[in-house]
Every structure is written in structure tokens, then in C-alpha cells.
Amino acid sequence: MSDPILGGCYCGKIRFEANPPVLYQAYCHCDNCRKAIGAQVVAWITVESSKFKYTQGTPKTYHTETTADRTFCPDCGSSLTYVHPDRSTHVDIVTGSLDHPECYPPNRDVFPEEKLPWISLCNQGRA
Ligand SMILES: [Zn+2]
Ligand SMILES: [Zn+2]
Image 1 (spheres, protein in one colour):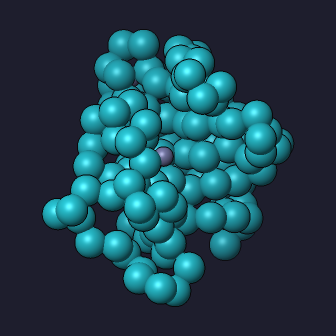
Image 2 (cartoon, rainbow, N blue to C red):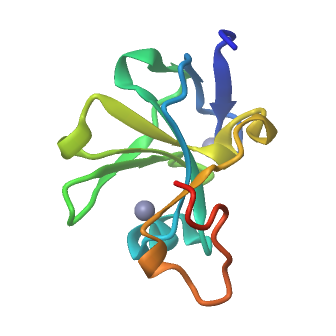
């Protein structure tokens, strides 16, 4: 699959384009993602930073206490991306912000030890 991966925020003011390969398709169960996104678990895809760009609008960046940068639309609040300096060549993109999230099912669980008790792991034991 070499077509660009398109996505954007809820209100449509921010649009982005990513390009394959998709390095990871994961659920993150960490406390920080849960709070930041406001969801019980967050699905992400990861691409090389050089293969990601905004094509419309400018997100707001929240610099977290763990030194990560989380971006979101300043108008509608949609979470869009996550970048951590420990792996600054990668950008994680919220799967739900993609135009076709159905194409990127998570196949691994990150921080499963922090998951809520009423959430099932997507792929137990087969990272
Ligand atoms: Zn928006
Ligand atoms: Zn997380």
C-alpha cells in the first residue's frame, strides 16, 4: 500500500498526510494517553516523522510532563499526534483521526499493565 494516509480533526480545519510504511499499529493503554485523549484506550499508527505533514491548519501542541508533544485541534479538540524525544524520528498518529481507520487495526498492546480492568487486550501474548 503506497497511497498517502489522509486524516484530520473533527471540525475539518486541520488536515494531514502521512506516507507508508506504517511502522506500528498499536493500542496504548497508558494513563497519560487515557487522560490526554479522554478515551479508555487509544489506537495509534506510527510513521517516520519525515513522512508526515500537515496539509491544512496548524494544531496546538501540549508539551507533557514526560517531555512528549501531543497535538490537537485548537477549535474542536481532536487529538492528532504524539512525538517523544526518545524516538523523535517517529510520529504517532491517532488512528481515529484517519479518514480510513478501518485499514489500520491495532495488532499489539502498549503499556498493557496500565490497562483498565474492563478492557481486553487486542492480541494477548503475540506482540
Ligand atoms: Zn478541528
Ligand atoms: Zn500512551
